[in-house]
Image 1 (cartoon, helix red, strand yellow):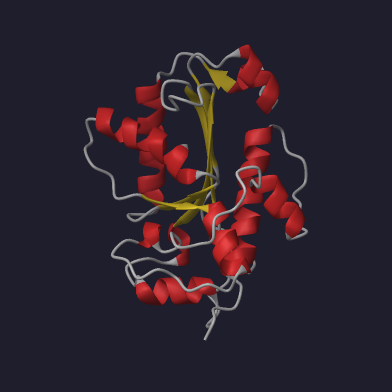
Image 2 (image 1 turned 90 degrees about the horizontal axis):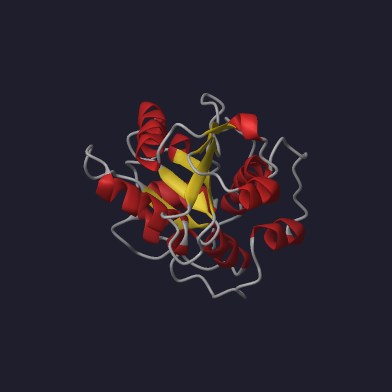
Length: 215
């Protein structure tokens, strides 16, 4: 499904939006959070990249901030001039949230290992943010791939973020790049690895959600 196209009837995306009519394809974003603390994601959080998955109307959001460790900079291939060390996590989240809210009232973020990483970071940021609760939903890319690969049914749920929760479990080592390889998807190299992963996440999401929903 190319960016900017209408949702195809009979696809997982079409079924998803028919069950959750408050959402459109423009609400879906690929989200990458950069951090240095696997056990306490928010504590080590120092970068965020978000790319619209289906819409061509919005530009990507990219911000690296605060105490961005040298080891993380090397891993992500982020030059020092791209890191705004004067911005705190609180300020970074406010900027990120304001950007997304200007694009959509109902953001849906797709990210690999969403519940153990991106969701934890955003939940803690929201808790500390004076703006209050945020109507953001999270979907794990691994679940999207697993369910669509197995032609499984979407879960009946009140929340769109739980629609893929019954997906067969994948090996912990089967992450974004393994999924992209399995689907023969690649993206051109970009200035940093976080941006590249966001583009790859968006491409994989489009491919999976365009798959035919089981009748």
